[in-house]
Length: 430
Image (tube, rainbow, N blue to C red):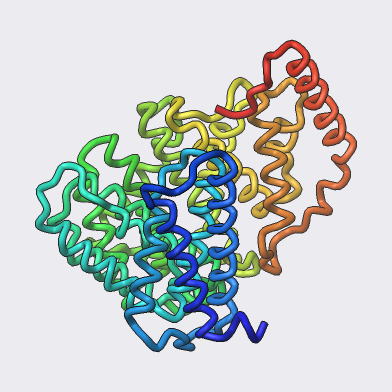
């Protein structure tokens, strides 16, 4: 451990990492399966060691005194973040590189933020139809507490109006990921926020919500902005409380009219009989985000308006995500994303009301679509492995379903075995 905490060792690892990567670009380098395998394994070892070195440092402890060293490492790591997911080895490298970036940003946030800010500035005057957005995507992988989140919001707001549409989409997705990272890394800050709102954050959320609202001119754009908008409202508890209580006749400021209209639109769109398919799908995604965020609020805080909003939408949401007729889907291009969304929905429903087993019954049904079986196993695995907030229900609640789970595993094994014998492999997910 002392070796891992030595800053000189970190620099050696960084230099070794760069030399290994550079070796792959030499014209006369060896070729072949073994060389490529050894090359990737070397990168994995160094990336993993770098992540351990950086993660072992306490917050606000500057271990890299030389700013240039940080910038050099950041530049190299960014190249791996931007790799296309061509094969499992590349996916592993990207995953490790994102962990290194997360650890690096803990004590070197300024260097990472400067890179993001500089790229936003360049993009604000860029006419290129396909600009490099990888530096904007760094927002998805960095360690942010509430102060850093505010800083990223402020920078994004200042540039939002002059950015092009495709940059908006990447920025919105990245900001959403940043909020989740903050909630997962600093859940107590989110809990405290529900009781004592942060004025700077509330101001940012208000400005960003309005910018997104002006961006959402079509159903397609609403589908892109609604998930982030609901998240902004949840981290603006006083505003959300005013908007929700207006339904019971409480006064609501005119400046929150758009927010109330947004909430009403989402609830209406959740009913497929009163809305277009595109808006219903957007509402489903939005409400899954809402339900997931609600699980980060202590259930003893029963007066929190987030819970009442969740109760207004959760039944229709489950009907959409867990229809016995077919799994929720927005089309083939969203295959893995829709699976992940359904997993989030299952886990959230379990944490909101663990004794309501409607979704569990559908996923356990041997006649249900195989995607539901995959969702169930993935959800249970997440419930077991995700760092647990003390009010989250534990997995023991579903122990009485172990016999049905075992039967499902046996059935799947038999199908796979039969498929292997006939050269028709079983396809689990799109």
